Length: 214
Image (cartoon, rainbow, N blue to C red; front, side, top):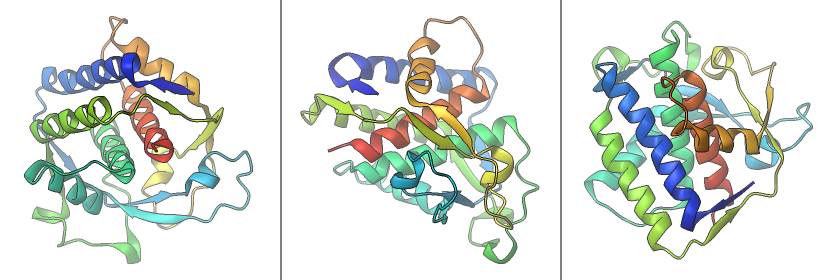
């Protein structure tokens, strides 16, 4: 999968704004996220066809959003990890809007009390919009000519397993990288409502960009 920054960033930008407009048209200006910890894997495992020996780690939506908020308050150089943080946040927003993930217990990993009111994280869509402008400006202004990801497939974790910290994911979904990118490029051309797959593909592509940005 290759993203030509000179031409393809416009498609990525259009797909992002379509998702944001979809939330606005649904009357959503704030998204409440009732999950925090989620399962993640390093890039070596993410793009490997061998799913039998994955070294699982736990990420935190609260920490990822906290890192991103710093760029809104005090703009600084975007780094590859910033794309990874944005990837997890946009996935959590899509899952929170379309699925009931609040029932997933965090067990021993619970951080209830540190996430704000009633243990929830509330993200303003307006903040996401401002943040995205910084990301696009970085790609366009920092001599990034192309992002080359020499991968064909990657693993996606289902929403039912992603936030369930009681058990490591057992049913991974093998996805085609070019198909995820095509989903976003076609988003602006198709006259269809924003759907969960758009959120997931945006999350996947942002993670791929972060892993391959040099």
